[in-house]
Length: 631
Image (cartoon, rainbow, N blue to C red; front, side):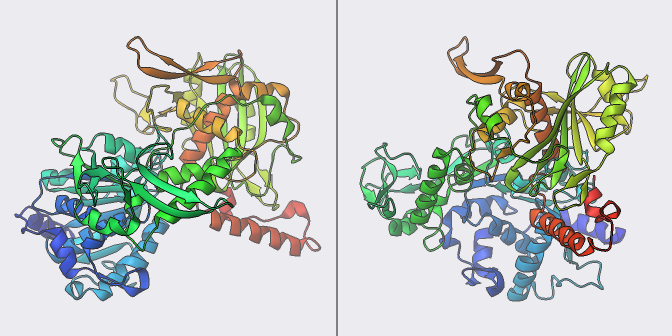
């Protein structure tokens, strides 16, 4: 857009908005395209009545500025954002942005959902053009219309978080966002700041399934909100309740029976008031007469929560939900809790509480695998490092990560020397800058390295990180409850006037307690796969003792409230600390949004290419794709 068009758009934006009920607008104008919809045709809010209050709060006549939606899967949260966008273009235009975890997801949504919807909605014909390579105003990631525009972006595109002011902001799948946008802080905060210029006329819509307790960003937003849960009336007694999973021993909630082979044959719900059986087909009328009950009704930030039990009949059945639960529970009994964690997040719409049982070091040592140190086994597609600083040495752990956070330790050692002197840092440089051979034959380099600043060598760490940022970054543990895995960095370098130096070193606080819980849970896994930790043969017994040197102790504070604290059961725990730091380094490098299919294809392609060249090209002359050198 030109500067003139920006001024016109802003001028139009400060005029009073028309009175629009987004529920009525959506039912009147929204059309779901055949190409990307399970139920194409006219949109019916009656199919998902729990969206109505959310749409009302997003309507221009509502004074609400921020809306948070914590939800399970198969609920229709993204469609709320779509209706919001289409109504903006049609009736009250202004600059709008929809952000997804990655730019690839944004492009896919624009192509499959937005473009097809424009074609199927008569009210948008002649208003919003479809993507046109010849027009900079109508591309896959930018679509302009009179008085405004839609911008589609990924949280991994920090440049998108710095440019023009935005009035309407949609943060979709919020917990999938990267933790740090190019060393500039939380992308969620950066994108939200783009709405500041519009003051009380802005609208921010955040939706996501939650993740890990203490890590989940949408859970933090929810805690600050009005905390509304959707209560539906019992078809027998009429009393309203929020549908819960509960457990099989409770006298209400979801229930099921199984046949002799353990397969579910019947699922129903028991009312918590009259204790009568409610069948799933009765859910449609219950939801039509439901309402949100807010725990904190006076809060301006409006929060809404729905789990997958509310998925409309024909979308996601209670039978399927509970079958998935039993399958995940069976895996958890064998030590693999990843499937149960996913179920809790995506079906129950609750955060996952990591446990902290102390693993047995001898069992970990006994399962070591015959891959060489300093080499990356197949499956490892991201290389990171965690460094613990001591007065007389640096403890270094290098780790590879792959799909669903499966990991491989490929190196652990102590580099002895005074960190106040350059020699030990030069040895660390050798590990940072060298190449590591992948099982495919390609060469990899460390993408991210986290170094602890605790102890007496803080300034030495700053000095090392400053020259090697953003690959190398300084961290400090934060054991406070609810501390995020990785915080927004705080600049540590100031000039003689106390002003922050541009390009100075940044310090990231990390949630050590949360990460330790995650690691200990994964050390208990017994089958390779999601979250499993691999170790090479050759690591010392002392490494495994240090890795399992802490235990989570439950107690009570002086007021009688339950508390949990990590305590050492032996003196040295550096290996555990290093593994914590390596995990944090992986999070910063994009562990949660890396395109593993693309990465695997590139590794496989390299391996096949080398196999065809073996007879004509020496192994030491191998060429590798630029992707594998990416920092």
